Each structure stands twice: as structure tokens, then as C-alpha cells.
Length: 127
Image (cartoon, rainbow, N blue to C red; front, side, top):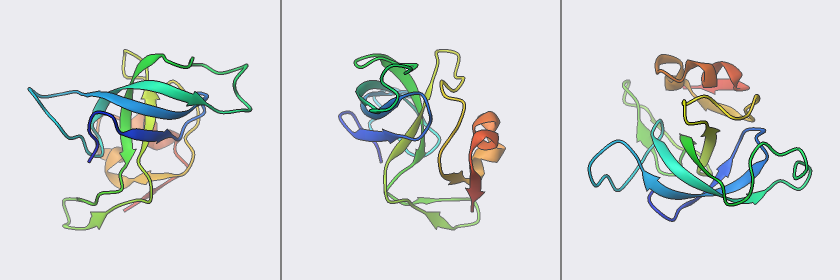
């Protein structure tokens, strides 16, 4: 579960390394976000190798899609899935990914949501 003030890792090649959650979207006074939710984030630090060619700047405010969480979440088949880190993918205002590659695997349910492009960019899908 992600809430305001949570620091998250970025797993795309946009140039950002760590972002902090500012606001949880989609709901009146919604406090927590889970996998598949969109949040508003601020870029806290950049990757060392990509500082010159980075697509984002430090302190920039963007949307992000949560793709991995430490807390377990249940799927339709009653399987629970969790990861070792909280991770996001940065999005533009039109909900398009900023980066062109996604590092690591994603949960399989992204194939059946409106974020199918993100599922196709990833290295693989796990159930």
C-alpha cells in the first residue's frame, strides 16, 4: 500500500531513480494506492549515467503507475503476489509512458487492463 510520502523506485529508462508520492488519485480522500493505481509523484533523484540525457528533471511533478508493491495483493484466482520493492513507471499527462523500456517483470493482470502498452514493453509477465 502506497500513501503520501512513500519513496518508490522507477523501473523505466526515463532517467529518474527515486520518486516520492505526493497524491493518490481516483477517489475522494483516498489514502492508499495499490498495484495498477495512478499517483502523482515528484522526482527525488536521477540515475548517474543518464543525468545529461535524462527525459525528466529533479523536482519535476509527474503521474506514475504503480507496478510492484511490497504488500501482497490478491488476484481473481485468489493468488497473492508481492515483490521486494515498491516500483513505478512514469507517465505523461496523457497516460503514456515516458520511457521506452521497462526493466524486470510485471504482474500478468496488466495484460487485461488499459495499460496494455506497458505490459508489452516489459521483459516478461508473471502470474
